[in-house]
Length: 112
Ligand code: DGP
Image 1 (spheres, protein in one colour):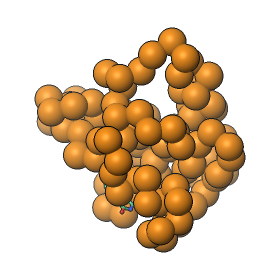
Image 2 (cartoon, protein in one colour):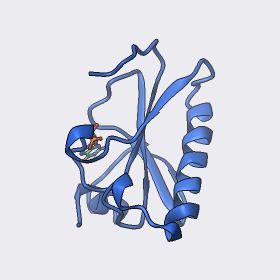
Image 3 (cartoon, helix red, strand yellow):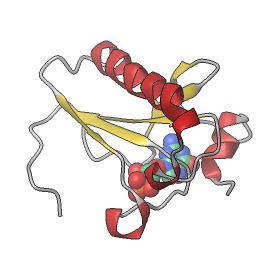
Image 4 (cartoon, protein in one colour):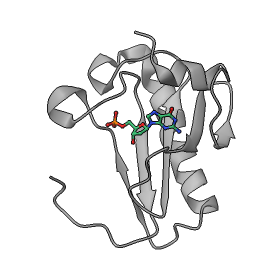
């Protein structure tokens, strides 16, 4: 299913892009919940964590590696949180797999 993130990948709508390669894209979240809040998404249209298949293993690996590298570049040496909201109960709004990376303040636990 296509979503707003497909338009960010194709540059039809702008985003503050932190990293781009052949497999994934990292960009600032439009509605930040922390001083640093960016998303890492695969360029492949995968709807959610629940839709991953064996062939997506390298894609997910790249996304998480990029999350780690961009977090370091964004100054999150004190730590951060990585979240993949999944389907309705997980609070997923955009049906394109994405990893939130949030940091720059002390985050509480558990989330709501
Ligand atoms: P969720 O599906 O609930 O895990 O969160 C989707 C996130 O995507 C939400 O934090 C806001 C962000 N978002 C939605 N539309 C856009 C957009 O057009 N541009 C950017 N940069 N972020 C967006």
